Length: 331
Image (cartoon, rainbow, N blue to C red):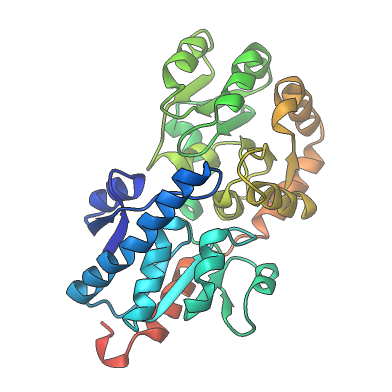
């Protein structure tokens, strides 16, 4: 395997940790930037096509797997020029600009849910589910709470803003921390930027655990919870169903449509509640109290979330890639 991504990125660190070879390319975002910066970054994306073609000729892959985002665009285009089978995986419910720009060059497009197929050419898509680490299916609340030295029978809330954290969620939590700690024991994943000041505030509460970032422990931190308070990034569509954990979702208002769509998808299926980012601080305690005071509703949300889980998603994607690989090249 060879991972192609941005230099100095999270994916580079994770690839190195997993002992997967990594090659860096120069790319930059386009959406939400001023026209000059966007044009410059688009030029970098185009220029990277030649770099990726050279990488492909050197590595000689039998298939390419891309997960969207601007870093994947030159990889898909270069793969098409080199005639390598190309699978794009779309984790969200709606394609972003990179997938819109590359979909016609994909051999197959893997999607998490059947509702997404309407965005692509007929017979191009295959529903695989959202792949998550095996640990999300292997952990359980009792084991998870023991890992974090929490009361196994007490109400538990996990608060998670994504890999980089969510400053506004952190502010709302700290503003309500006294009432939150009375209501439940807390696992708060703050992101690195807010780690120090949130931990200072949390020291006064014996039942609050604050962390800047969790990697291997993340599935257990979420599994420990009766309710998760989180943004509505694509991972919520895979990780929360795998755990069967109800959610209060706070879509990031500047992330385009995809977080709103992800939140709506889970809310409409009875698996989550939604709170506007601007209202979180004043509504947080009321929303949690409503759930904890209605155990039948909480159980129904748990069942609805678990019904969306697709444990074989990773295997399904692997099978798609294997089917596109020449028979003589298969291991």
